[in-house]
Image (cartoon, rainbow, N blue to C red; front, top):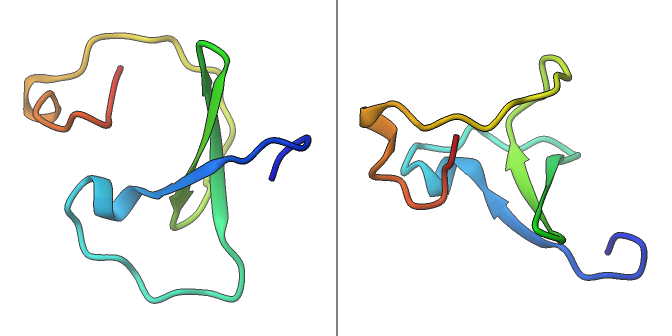
Length: 69
């Protein structure tokens, strides 16, 4: 829950068809908002925070429907 709203969680390893690392006691969740909808993406770790600009994906990642620029 975030601000009283249900946030759906997705595991990045599963979305990319990769093997997950062994779990820890706590989850690292990246919150992503697009067009007013917020989702959570479970990641192995957060290395740094940055502002991102939306760009087209490289050809090798375009087949993954859950990933965008």
